Image 1 (cartoon, rainbow, N blue to C red):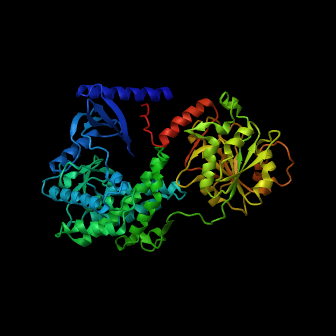
Image 2 (image 1 turned 180 degrees about the vertical axis):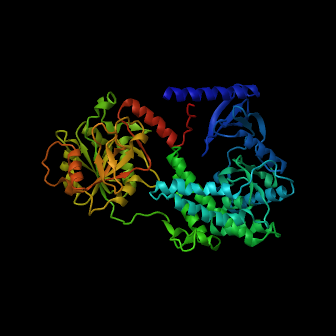
Image 3 (image 1 turned 120 degrees about the vertical axis):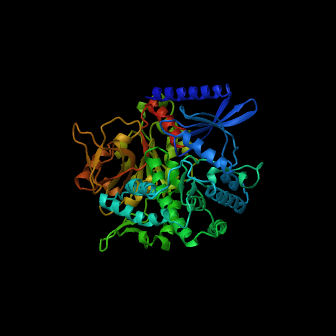
Length: 599
């Protein structure tokens, strides 16, 4: 499979070089600039002292013609979109003018005048909307109508809510969309506001500083290929209610006033209604999109923005313009008179808030035989994954949680591990020596005097995972119930586990209890190597080697063994070959461009 992926990528690169050669850029050097939330990639092209940008938009995934069409419209309006230097729409390549590297985002990080940059961005919108109204008919762009806005709003209930354990029934989903239709129809059909060009992703990441140009031409525009005809409030709310950046409330109010002052004939009330309604719709959409990017496309970095999006969404739901959609701190649907409302917690929360564990056991004593020859000279926990030893990756996650002290058991090449961890202070490290290898259950039992009397985390030292919407350790701690659980296992979908080809370990009941798979059965979940255990699980056990499976079975019999489905990614790193594949996959998850799939 990997050979096929590499072959496809090499073929795509060869096609790109052929395109460059045909348009006079033969022998040019390419350097990756960026890959975004779509399937597009951008490369900086250097040749004999000149440079340009190559857009790689695979035609089966992206529409380069749409970019070309909107760029032409923007140029007609006297605005700064990258000039098209060459094109091959059939292959999905555009050679673009290079605007450089100074986005508004980068300039703001360097200390540029925030107000001046937002003034320029708003003035550019004012120019775009003023000139568009005088430019004649629609120029072949589709309408940003209610149905399209509803499709986007549905992403919230179709992706985010199931991901956090609150899926909607078909009837509740229909109620949700009915509320949005009630809110959006007056905005879309508002006759007192014109339809204008809407770029749809107008924010500081997609705006460039062009110091050699004057006026609004000094604002370079990027990422506009999805433009439509719609309400003038949409791009302004995209700029000021930014999903990726906190814009001060005072600056938001100032720029909103600046924009409205340019259109004195418009109804301020109608614009405000559109502004807050479309802001809420946009944030509901983006919460869904960022969840989809994490779960379907393997891009979890977008989840960092979810807390900000929830805050913005909450502020918008509290506005009087959205009164039908919000009651207190819950999204409430009231589609029919007298119907019982369906409330979704905002944001979704767990019913109880137990004290999280402050101690952890890290299992690091094994031989790692399947990792030979890599483990001939060092223990498996010290093998690096993506530039960091596996045990350090685990301890880093524990340190970022509530864990203050971690117990590491030692046997195979224990001195190497002791030396490696001796300088670590967070979490504080204590060692549990094993003269003979005690297996998982025996190793934890041997370390119990160091683990205290409360529930504690247990982590295999070679577990590699990426968090989902919330950190996995935090989720385990929030679900732990001391009254009914002796063990809580983090489980991952067997079919989605990277590098795993086994038959699974457990099935998961609706109440969270687990059972082992039957003989010749394929179980839906595999154990990840992360769990919470209570010391009482070990009552009455004899010292010596034994597997933790024995105690899990005992807890299962007494209905005290529970599981929690992991909502992120999990990697099975059992052999040198899987280590290589995990390295590659992690590089994609952490931002490297992913090759196009073989079709």
